[in-house]
Image (cartoon, rainbow, N blue to C red; front, side):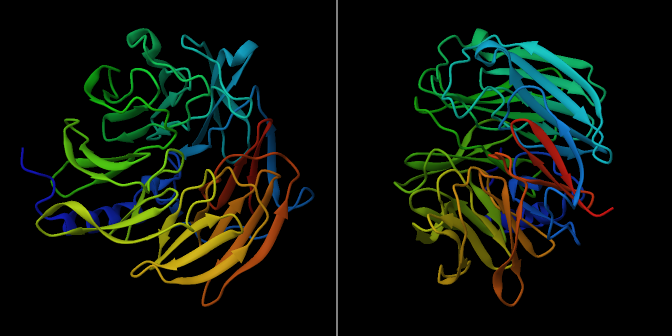
Length: 405
């Protein structure tokens, strides 16, 4: 197979186009289209409260840190319940009305021990509108069609008995064509799987360091008909081929960390962490060339993003904004945390939700400034989803739809 990096610039520019326009009306995976956290949606709500702007509010069974995903006119969500979070739920909702269309429940087959802040429904599912793929922190994977019919089910804990993570896994799967990328980094048998989305069978298995990691993979399609799967952990960022699982390149660095996820856009690849690396492809070099780095782009769990020539990320004081070309800091916006979810951008506005349920809306016009703080007084630890002119927020107990009537 020809190397995927004969023309890295062309590949990453192609990926930027993909990240910007694919699934413009949908939010099919963790952090939305292509994992970019950027939507082409326009005219989204800017202000709301518990008394106005909420189109519907639906109670949820069980707990969950997974984010809503929306595609094909349906919203999908997961949760977990019962003793030690041993009951797994996959649900579908009408995004217009908030009514539940169906719910399927499964018994966890793997270890359900975890930190009190998390649960088995921490990974966000992935969908193409016709199928929903739900990964749970106990290493169970359920594939269902849009009507809730079971397509296949995998117990990775039974397939790989040495999987172990006593604090809970949270990395989310990614669907690329008919390849389902399943991250399973842990302190035991650690790996990433490429699974046939139609059958649930392994296409490839890429072994990973035996260390706990909550970062989700990033898939970047290229012009050769394949795609790169970008992985990171404490000490490295690397690329494997989505079709074969073979390593393309690896970059050792003390910067990337185990919680935030990599991001690509506008010809750049961001590997976030205690010192976020901003990488750019260079002709004739398989490893993306470092452009600049910063220790002000990641605050806790949140992942940064790239939008219209700027890089946005969190620090301990709130939002930090940098010029994407040279890393020069151009703005700071103070906000009250803590934040478990990541910022998203839609309609030239940035939305960020703290754990107290306050959504901060930042205008990204000529002046970058906070224009609204919207409180719904519910604990939210998830990243918002955007689709069909609406914003979807998920708490442990409720699913919210915010929009104009």
